Image (tube, rainbow, N blue to C red; front, side, top):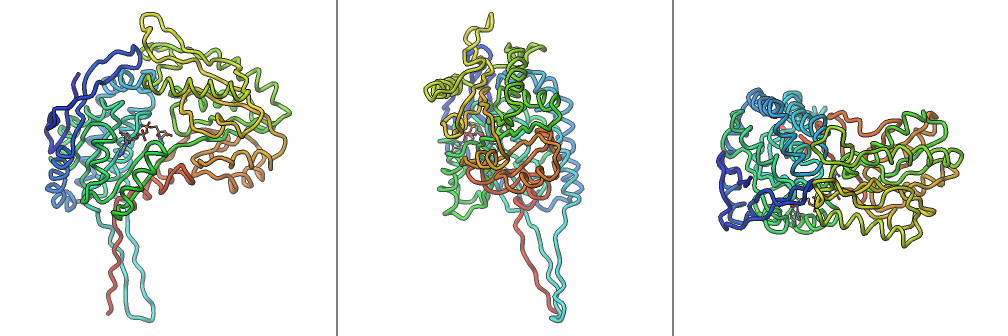
Length: 479
Ligand code: NAD
């Protein structure tokens, strides 16, 4: 199916008539085309957004909330179709898209539809000065939202929903690798009664369409999720233009397992935190550190469970691991496995491509566990973003803390222990924006979400997102 840009409530072909092939990861075939939108298309999207802004920014919170709730319901009503499209476009098991991705996209709209009705600004009485200050939180205007391919609709809506709730109009670009569900969202927005031009979705390569968004002089804020190198490029371009920037970038997250943990729960969850979505979640725990006293037992039990994971076609209900998102990504992940071997990593299981009968050209890879002896190796320092984890033992809390922090990233960390004081000590000292203790990826949408160091700048989630998408203005009145 060919995809079109959604501008001013209508669907348009790109002005340049340039198209990109859209591949299906499950069989490696081209199954549609997407526009490679030019500067001119982004300008058209901007003009539509700018025209819609005066009215949308003055729409009552109740009305904005009502429309966003309708979009949420529209996503829910199209669960089957959207899950199917997400799975076909991304290679993820349809069961995952149905259970997680699409319901979460719906929750994102529902959450911010409700949050905006509870969002309040501050006032400060200046005692002794006969003055009162109050803070306005005004929408910024036209903002840009750019998202990656790993959780396509989930992350796209995680940006768009708060931007719209706060009264902005949006020019958004999904990843060119997985554009389909963002395309389908346009029709849902129209049916929900979102006024024309409030949301515009342009498709294309990062270097053409994305670049046109970030360097547009009047798109005043950029919310970006993607790779660290892209984030650095966006910062270089947008910071001198004094745009507001929220950057959610890569990770290399530690999963720290102590002997006193609830072992069975830890084991089950660790398999998930390693390989969910083919390991293509920025929050996956790709560096597993295990206390030496249980290391051998863990190694045996974990590898046994990983070997049981079924790699298969994403449409099959018994598939645990679908296809990786693209051929270049599959090749990158396989190169990382090769590097690990060259650095004396021991592959305990996996490491090879999988041929799925009938879909021989699909991008399938075995879930891979590599035993390493040092945390300094490249495979432990660089983001792989695929079904590959490393395991190694540690002796003391200090040792593991040092290793956990010795990467350039700081997105999330997982701790498995029942020792309260240790939990608090480590949680305080780990360089990460999110620490999960005895769980993984449990999300409360009110909490701040984001990373430190090379994992990003700023926080999404709850009121943090609404603060990002508004400009605070203090008004001081003397009486
Ligand atoms: P990417 O950086 O290649 O692309 C992300 C988006 O940016 C895409 O839409 C792309 O077209 C666009 N883009 C690329 N170049 C651009 C440019 N010059 N100007 C504007 N936009 C441009 O990332 P990816 O490969 O799609 O996603 C994987 C990465 O995303 C991983 O590093 C992963 O850790 C990260 N990620 C982070 C989070 C988080 O919340 N921190 C969540 C998911 C994924």
